[in-house]
Image (cartoon, rainbow over all chains, first blue to last red):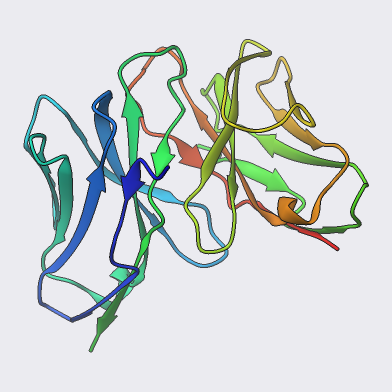
Length: 115
Length: 114
């Protein structure tokens, strides 16, 4: 049972345009959400996070939006740059269960930013 | 600040064998967790160690076990290897006291079981 879903395996965007990556979740106990970026032969790198008490969090070119009623979040990258080409993973964690580092990941979206 | 380091980077084992993967946590971090990433999938939580004890486990059988040492480094041991154990194994560290601090991942060990 996939509790975190990224339904688009790949996305291609032109340099300078907006990239929008989507993520849906089913577990109502999730209250903290993160986006990670992964380059080949490297581990995932943390990008941005959002708590369920917020509906938006911004960090430079990256903005994450959370719609709790729809159990949906999205990552916006503006403007997109060629260096953003990577696999992006959405991840979620539940309210404090004592296992703070248990994240549930989606299957990832491969973003390609073209010139 | 030293990041999370894992060794070896690649490993090939035969079905039925045992394997040990190693991880050094980022300095200042007291919690380590291990993830398995199969091809085309997202990372899956195996377990977490804090104060040298396992204190959280995902849906993995007992042949997956671990250790955390006083210097917060860690090992992942897998016994009786199966073909489906072929995957990228990721180690991540964090500070337990900061429940919502993001995990910092190493570059992983690519395990191939033949």
